[in-house]
Structure formats: structure tokens, C-alpha cells
Amino acid sequence: MQTETDAFGTWMLLQTGAPGALGDLVAAAAKDRAFPRNGTAEDVRRYLSKNMAPGEMIDAVDDAEADWRNLQ
Image (cartoon, rainbow, N blue to C red):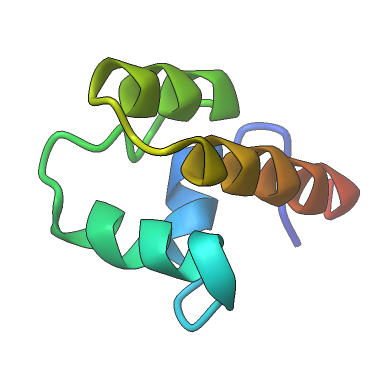
């Protein structure tokens, strides 16, 4: 069970095999040493925006955040 202190970035990286843009994002993030693993969803969005990620990746973070919050 997730707790409020569990980092969104860490949880997101555990979503290996997710379909669509989230799966693509997780695969890329797992290889990216600068990805905010201990960050919030907003940290992840900021990082993606700074690195000019496509809009569907930001949308995937939004959807993943909703799923993550439902587990809290």
C-alpha cells in the first residue's frame, strides 16, 4: 500500500509494462539518470517540460498521478 510519503516518481518507475505513453515514459525515465525519482508529479511534469517532452507524455503523468492518488 502506498503512503503519502511515497514519491510519485518512484511509484511511476514501477509501472513497467504500462500501455501507451505511460509505458514509453517509464521505459525512457528508467534509463535517465536525471529523472526526478524522488519527486512529485509536478516535479516530473516540470522535468518533462524542461526537456521538451511531447504533450502526450505530460498527459500520461496526469493520468498516472490520478491512479497514484487513488492508491493513497
